[in-house]
Length: 265
Figure 1 (tube, rainbow, N blue to C red):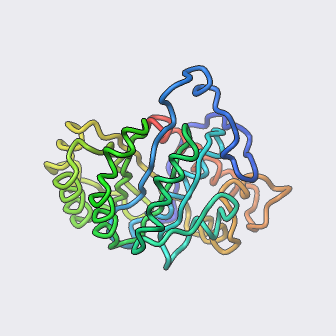
Figure 2: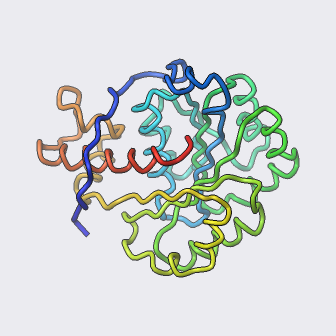
C-alpha cells in the first residue's frame, strides 16, 4: 500500500559517520552506570517479516542518537547490515559457535556499549543451543549486561505462534521488544486479541510499530545501497530521491526513532 501515515516531527541529532563506538552519550555520562550495556538480538524466526529492516533502523537510531555500539550481521542470505552499514558491521555465522562467541567477547572488550545482532530466519535453534551451552544469559548478567530480544512480526498467525514459543523458552530471563512491522501488513488484530499480547505485557515487553513507507522510496534507498540517513542529506544523496520523497523518508525515520526512544536502549 503506497501510503505513509502522519508522524510528529521531532528534532534528530546530526548524523555521525564512521564507527560510532567511541561517541559518548550524555545520558550515560550523567548516569555513570548501567545504561547502555545491552545485547540486542533482532529476530522473529519467520522469513520476510522485516528483521533486517528493523536491524537497519536500530543501527540508524544509535548513530543518530550518538550511542556507542557494535553490530553483527548473522543473515548470510540478506546481509543487510554489511550492505548498508559496512563501516560498523561485522559478519557473524550463526552455525559457528566461535562466531557467536564474538558477541560475548565484544561485550567484555567494550563495557558500556551496545551490541546489535541481525539474526537470519530459522536460526533460533542454533542461537538457543549456543546460549544454553554457555549459560549465556547468566554470563552476560554477571558482566552487567542485559539481553533484549526484538521479535519482529507481520500480521499473520505464524508470528504470534513464534512469539509464544519464545516466551515459553525464555520467560522472564530476557527483555523483549515486540515490533509490529506495518510494512508487512497493517492489521495486527490477531496479536492484539491473543493471549501472547497479555503475556508480553506481564513480562514487561516494550512495543514498537514501524509504519508503512511508500514502496518506491524504499526501493530507491535499497537500490543505491545507501544508509537511511543518506536520503535526508541532498548534498550526499545518491538515492535519486526528490525533495518530497526525502521529506517522506524524514518523517518515517522520525516516527521510527520516536518509537525507539520509548525502549531502554
